[in-house]
Image (spheres, one colour):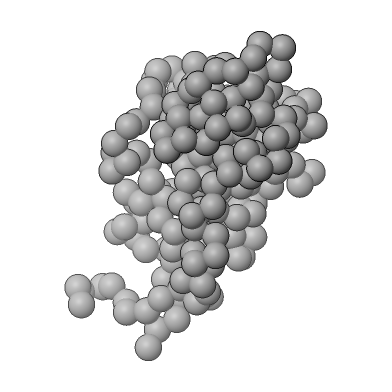
Length: 199
């Protein structure tokens, strides 16, 4: 064991991942055929249903336009279409991040990753988080659930916004503490959670 690192595990995480980890919001969208408002890279916002959920691409049916195939990395976040007006009023932009002109990151290891053992205590303890997406969109709320591909934030008024994990640039708690793997790999805040169990 390396010095300073406690032996232990997050109670309940393994069972949660068994049931939820491989589920994608795109599976849900394909099954229901409902309209979603999707925020795509390049500040493009469309209302569309999912026609096909391929390994790396989606075929979406855009309202009043028709089918279009897009790479999944183009999708930053999405939510049921009935929340469109409420989300527009709530959305804020971090101009500094927006000015960086960030492009989608194809290599998973190079993305701004968040560890599952960080997300699970945040979800269980209903902590407020502040998420910044790759083009500067700021979303505040409570983590509702997460999978390998995405996480759902319940924003003001309970509005459910699903963020694609590849579209996240930063995540912080109310105290401004960074939740990204690059920070948490060293600081290991999950060991401070009440869910952390030691032998």
